[in-house]
Every structure is written in C-alpha cells, then in structure tokens.
Length: 368
Image 1 (cartoon, one colour):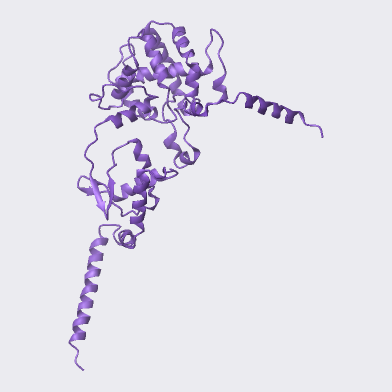
Image 2 (cartoon, rainbow, N blue to C red; image 1 turned 135 degrees about the horizontal axis):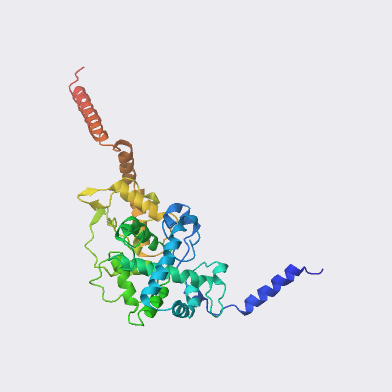
C-alpha cells in the first residue's frame, strides 16, 4: 500500500529530529528561568497573573490594555541612549552575542520570537528586549530620585507620574511571567558605563526600588531576574523570632506578612477548619484570615514527598481528623459565628445545667 506524502514527510521529520536530539537533557532543562504559570493555577484567579500596566518580555506583549505603555518604553529608550552617548548599534551588538541564551531563559517562547536577525538588523526578539530593558532601568533609577532629563509633568517618570503608576509597575515587575533576564540589564549597563558598573549595581537598584533592606547584603551574586533578586534578599534577611503556637503538639510558624518562597509550600490546608487559629498578631488570633490564606496557597500545589513540610502537613491533617478537633470546629462554626452567639450559647448552657441540677435535687428529695 503506497504511503501518503504527508506520512513520508512526517517520518523524515522524526528521523531528522532523532539525529539532532540533544544528548544532555539536564543542560537543556536547566536553562529556562522565566516560566509560564500552569493553566490549572491561573484559572483559579486569572487577574492575579495578568500585568496591570506594563509587559516585560514576550509572554504578555501585545495585550490591548498594555498598549499605552509601549509609547513610554520608546521614550525611555531614547532618553537612555541620549544620556549614555552611545549608539544603539553597540547595545544591539552586545545583546546579539547572548541572544540564544536570552531566548533559552524563557520556558515557552513562541516561534515568532525565534526568527533570526541578519547583519545590520535586529531580530524581533531583540527589538523587544532592548526597549523593555531600557524602560526597566529608567524606572528603577527614577524610583529613589527624579531623572533630570524628563519633564516635570512627565506621566511616568515625574514625581506625580510615579505617584500614580509606581505601585502598579512594581507589582508587574514582580510577576513570574513578566520578567526580563538579568543578562539584558547587565549588558545594557555595562555598555552604558564602559564596563565600570557590574551586576551588583543593578541588584542594588532593584533592592532600593523594592525597598528591601540592603545594608547587611554585601553581594547578591548572580541573579536570574528582578523577582530572583527580591527572593534572595528575603532569604538573606536576618530571620526574626517566630511566634509559635502549640495545638496538641502541632507547631505552626507565623507566616502572615511574609512572602518567602517557602510560604507557597506550607500547608496543603484544604482540610484546615476555619476555627484553626495558629497565628497571633497584635495580641489577637485571626483564624478566618489564616485558614483562607492556607487554603488558597494549597490549591493546585503539589507537596514534595518526605520533605519537612510534608511531615508538618501530616501532623496538621492528623490533628484535624481527631474527634475533639472536629467537634470544636463544628461548635465554633455553628454557634460562635458572631459575637452575640457566645452570650446566647452561655445562657442556654447555663439554663440546661440549672435544669439538670433542679431535676437531680427534685429526685433526691422525693419521698413516696
């Protein structure tokens, strides 16, 4: 039976792929550092994973509500080039040298961004990286102080402009899908300063922008992107004394107010009762807030087996399955949902106890 042409083409394609198949898969999967959040997570709260003001990198580029910021990216590029006194070609050349590494930083890069560049022209990917990188550097620099070459009424880089937009851009800069490889910023700064400023200069800019304490941090080392700098700064921060509250031998550390990477792994807590109140803040327990936090962190999250967190999760689950814990949770959820329920419950319990006592005395005093 003769083969169809498309079947033959497919066989040839598979054979060619087999011949060019990389021998070191570990190296291949070790390159990406900017990932797409799985759909099973984004579907829980789509808005939480969408940039509000600006896109960095290819994942969210072209979205309609982010178009207005593209004009300001172009303005930032022009100001950056004019202030540096260097031609665009020098920045393009230095990024073209590492273009493949920059592309490999993105886990799911669409084919349209992988189209190559010819001599004297920039690929579509580099046309995205350079304006995004310049805009990010300009905004990082303008956060602590206003740059002199922008107008006093500039909608982005003036004092009033930053007041209106900074919180949104800061949020967007810390989104996992909205990152630029640190190599882009390092290369731009190196050309701009003729090699006088290294990667630590960019790291310190990011720490100041995020208002992270950096006096105790002498050197951050190699970082992957802005979010990685923020993460490492939190890990390097001196840990305060944690308030630990015991519940039948189960200790739960206070995590409200922290944003450490470990926080998204704590508590596979879908089975935490709303009466579970491990966190103490300002002398009061915020049980509903904590239960809601744990449950939201646990959705669609896989816990690593045999880890220390897995042991804590098992202890919490065992505690929640005890009859007394379940009865207490039912009691709080049913009768103590509002402040007025507590006096009513006490009054009802007192009436019941008094009735029992009255019945006992009547029985003991009865003489036939």
